[in-house]
Image (cartoon, rainbow, N blue to C red; front, side, top):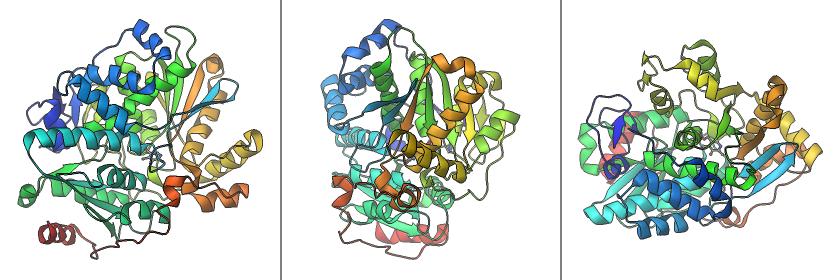
Length: 449
Ligand SMILES: *Cc1c(COP(=O)(O)O)cnc(C)c1O
């Protein structure tokens, strides 16, 4: 069962949490109890394929909500791409989460969620509209994941002036059941409109649902690459390792924290953020202050001044924070600090890291992965004792999505993966309307759906 992080509405089952996305009291759904997997089993994952690990882990959480043959199929079809791990230097590894169709780690969550939702909608004979706000990559991953799915329409809100051409084209070249709207504003505005629409009584007949990391179904599959990458490098049972997680809305990190609660031996999570430093400041001071407006950094999918998944993170440690960012019950700060360390990486350091990484290893990091790698380097300097623990940095996107930065920094044009190549010259279905306020957006929804 799932509770709302605002504790102001009743508990629901998995199906309801998935189809609703956000809880009725505007909180986020979170597991009441996190199931455990024993160490023997986790160690034996070394011998399993990704999809089998996926089934082992997800069936623990989902229980009987989805029959096992169906669940196996969902995982196999959704996560049908490579997840390579590479040894870089000393005890430091990179796990590449960018091999899905939109070349971002969001393919894990979006593709799995799409199939789980469709399964439940068929049973209920219902139709829904997926409303999602994107800072860059979610929109493309969600739009592609739900493209041409029966019973589902998709509306994506993105900040018109803050995303790359390729990111935009991943949303605007689809058409059919996908509508992409570039708004004059920031990602935080997009997120605000989406949240408001979900809570708007005049829009209930639209059956709006969310595929943002607000939706618990997005988090579920984000536990899997932690188990997988761990199992690829672990040598002893119970061996602890360090994960560095480039963080924006903290959905990726939440996947890791849930994996740890399930039993995965994690020495430390490094939450690597860009110049939007509300989280490292919170860890340091115990006071939470949003960054308003959020700062524009080159790791643009992490330009988040008030991460939505903080509600789940704080809930996991016994606290409570509402959607405005007001903490009504302080979480166990000491426990959080034990398990998570967070560094804010400036754009300047991100760029230096991309350059140095290329010079030292002849490989190209993109800005998000570079933030993660830079944070590991700081951690290695600060915690000399921890050198014996191996680290895995999660690389969350393909460098080809940020060609200008890469060309400027390392003078190489990153090779464009096939899935990105084919959308480059496709026709865009651009902005049906100019949207500057929530009222504009609501009007658009009412007139068109
Ligand atoms: C969304 C995204 C992130 C941040 O992930 P969160 O789950 O929002 O913390 C990092 N890198 C890339 C490329 C992304 O698309």
